Amino acid sequence: MYDMRSLKAEEFINDEEILETLKYADEHKNDLALIDEILEKARPKKTGRGVECAGLSHREASVLLACEDTAVTEKVFALAREIKEAFYGDRIVMFAPLYLSNYCVNKCVYCPYHAQNKEIPRKKLTQDEVRDEVIALQDMGHKRLAIEAGEDPVNNPIEYILECINTIYSIKHKNGAIRRVNVNIAATTVENYKKLHDAGIGTYILFQETYHKESYEKLHPAGPKHNYAYHTEAMDRAMEGGIDDVGLGVLFGLDKYRYEFAGILMHAEHLEAVHGVGPHTISVPRLRKASDIDLKDFDNGIDDDTFAKIVACIRIAVPYTGMIISTRESEACREKVLGLGVSQISGGSRTSVGGYAGYTPDERPHDTEQFDVSDQRSLDEVVKWLMDLGYIPSFCTACYREGRTGDRFMALCKVGQIQNCCHPNALMTLQEYLTDYASPETKAVGEKLIEREILNVPDEKRRQRAIDYLNEIKNGGKRDFRF
Image (cartoon, rainbow, N blue to C red; front, side):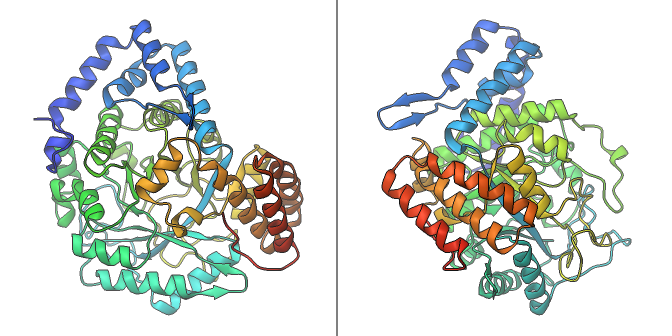
């Protein structure tokens, strides 16, 4: 039985409800009057407190996704752009993954880290190697990392993860510092989530991979990850452990995309109903080629147009949730979805264990890669590209460190007030990047962007303070100003 407030995976992600939703969507996908009602419900509304959005249920959003009318698709895209602009403006948050270890005891059939893969060398970073990787990332200009590790209780116990987090936060190299460490590790216990919370992590991220239970168990034939319920209920344990910000994601290409779309929105609804706050982020990775993995074994791939529509429909359904796209996607694909809802992207990424230290921006090791990287540009190239497109690359971590997480973040975001902090913070962190790391070409573009965008800070006193901070950064003074 479907119950979004239940703590049992098969009740808040209910197969019968998803199948009924898909049937409902097929029956109503050509009902243009209903679709217009759905779009109007989701449209941003000005209130006395700012701008608010109602969002959509998984069933309403599924109707939009199922509709094949090109005129409706254009309306969906236009509304997604409107919502993105209302709550995130032109800011795009930058991050990089850091792979700590590819030891894994699971046998996931789509991941090259699976325990039976004899082609891939196994590697685990020492703390000295973690330090080298972090310095290399700091020298690129990164301030926010997402750490990754396979599931292996012997090689990658929680104590190892905690030690790595401590090492990462401890390193101050020149003007560099990692200010936020997000964690993408296997489902674990409430006790371990409490330890991660106490270590000062940002967001806990865990991809569901697929919400279809039967497919899930076939794709994870052995290892701890085989347990569908334990994996699906992980976010509830994380929140019980004190982690305010959690990030959902599915791996599109493993099962039917409309099923996954409904499932991830149901998961978001569940978190909102039970914990009072939905996911901080939703990731939308697609299956990619990797060592020992042949894409011909999977027949649920989606094209770029369908992918873009999924992004737009998620943005409309959960207007306040951040959306992440990685270097799995090509430059062209990333450009298309930036305006439709994506608010965070990676840049200069390596998906190998030890992939940063000792390599030039044009070099990348392939022996321990988790997947092929489509967008192989350097961080500097990505930053300039974003600015050329009219976006503001942001290295900001202020909300996390000012305690604006979980329901406190959402309370501000839901009335559009978070932008009063985010816009100047984005410009100040961009100025740090331009001053300390950027190429002359990127710096020239960025200086003009900041000069123009600082005028868009509405509060005069805050604008003047931000200008003073920007000048101090440019002149080699203090770093890490924030509102």
